[in-house]
Image 1 (cartoon, rainbow, N blue to C red):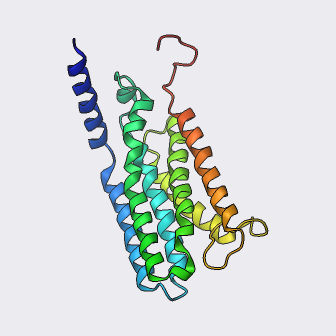
Image 2 (image 1 turned 60 degrees about the horizontal axis):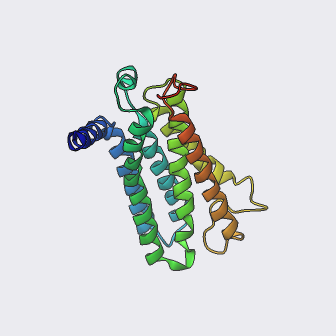
Length: 215
């Protein structure tokens, strides 16, 4: 008989959880990524397009890293809303940087289809998954707002790894144009997304609930 009010409370909690997100850095990082994508689009027939796009996709991953920030973690953990449910409300915020990446890659593909820009969609997903996964690990270790640190690590890490491309003999991490093994690249980045999803689920478990039935 009280189910309708409970549903309303859940939505209100969700609204509060979303309002408490670190919107300024999240929007700032997504905006920076959008600006970089615009620069790449304007320079789509030059050598500047590829590195600028890589930087933009890494910036999208950095933006996603802010989605789990909660400054008042002890207070939040004492509320009836579980950490995993709060994460469930927050992680969809990554749709914003993902939309920037997808729209940017579709724009670049339309401007220069020979470069096959859409092959970078799995890389974009991997960058976002890395940002969220690392943030979840630090949250699990007690860092209330890991966004700043994880954002920098994600940005620098994705750019360095893709630029160095240590697996170039077997797979191209940035499979533009005539790059070989494009299918392997897609499989690799999808595997990264899967691993990060598992890590995120494991790290968003409520603290102190292991082995306690009924909680």
